[in-house]
Image (cartoon, rainbow, N blue to C red):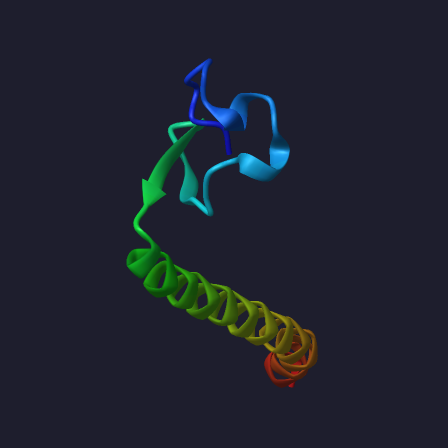
Length: 83
């Protein structure tokens, strides 16, 4: 990443660029918001993001199972009511 100082070596030499920098971005009211993180926080956020992704995956799987169950249970309920 370049620091923005015109006389710094990073402005002309890619090998001299600064970093690594850690950044967290998210959407807020339709706009992207970004914050730079200290390296020690980046590890915690990385773990938290991985946990959230795992949770979302489990929820999607549960939704799929629920949809399949619904397709099987609904006809059974209709048959009971017709009797």
